[in-house]
Structure formats: C-alpha cells, structure tokens
Image 1 (cartoon, rainbow, N blue to C red):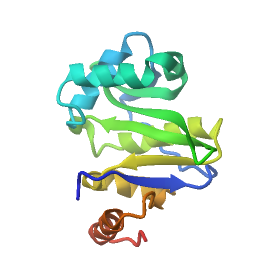
Image 2 (tube, rainbow, N blue to C red):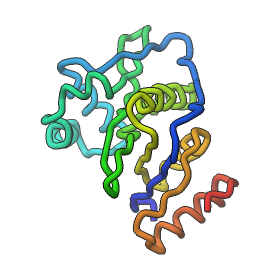
Image 3 (cartoon, helix red, strand yellow):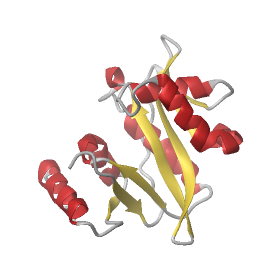
Amino acid sequence: MNDICIAMIRHDINNIPEYPLPAGFSFRAFAGGDETTWAELMVVPEMFQDADTAMKHFREEFLECISDNKDRCFFIVHEATGRSVATAMAWYDCLDGEDYGRVHWVVVHPEFQGAGLGKALLSRVMQRLAESHSKAYLRTHPVNWRAIRMYTEFGFTPWITNNQPEEVEAWQALSDKLGIPLL
C-alpha cells in the first residue's frame, strides 16, 4: 500500500501558515547548474536510485521550462557548510481544465529533518503559489506520513482521484496512524 500514489488538495490558498527558517539556514532560488544539486537531494530519500536517474528525470520534466525554475524552485542552504539541504518546487498544472498550483518534489535531507525546515519550505512554496494560483494540490505516498501530517497543518485534505479502494484504504490507515480524521 505504501507504493501507491495519493493526492491532497487545498481548495483555496488563503491564510497560509507562516514558518520562518531556523537560525543558520537561508533560502535561495534555483540557479544555473542546480540540476545536479536537485538530483543529488532526490537520491537521499531514495526517490531515485542514483543521481544520473534523477538528472534524467529532471531533464525530461523540466528542461523545456528550465527558466521557470528560477522563480519556482527553492533550496534551503545550511549556512555553516554552504550545502543545500532541502528543496521544493512551487509548480503548476492543469487538472480537469482548471489551473492549479502544485507542491512538487519536496525533500529535506534526513540529517536536517525535525528542525522545522519542511514547514518553512512549504510556507515559502505556498506563498509563491499564491502569487499566481487560487488552489493547489500535491501527490505523495503513504510512507511519507510525517509530511502528510504537515500538509494537513497547511490545509491540504485527501483528494481521492481515481475512487480506487486502495486510495480509500490508504487514507483510512493514515487517519489511524496520525490520529486525525482524514476522510
């Protein structure tokens, strides 16, 4: 069940929770050459088997619209080391003929999880989405239950996209695990 894709939606992007970055971290926007940084971050949580595979995916999904990344892809930098330790995209999509913002490719390096970086990053992504979208969605997997809890704190709710019993079962299991009503 953890390998199925589930979706969450936020029907409006008003009243976005604001979380500042902890001391010692800063935001920066995507710049030339960051394809490699993005790919390396994607390998850490095993989203891709290796950086080459992640890089290939990046090129396939974003090469045609690479200039959009400068405004929509964010990194969090650990100031003491200069290392990028988290990333997320404030992307866009069209669903059922409607414009949606998309929270896309959210990763916080495991060494830095639990420090508030995810909330600060999601806050920044949602602020960017609010500049050009009225609603947003995201896709994730049940194994990412900690992130799903955070998404609910940001007003996202389950979005049963295919009305598949596996989706409903996954949301029921997540509701039990998180101790919050999701359906």
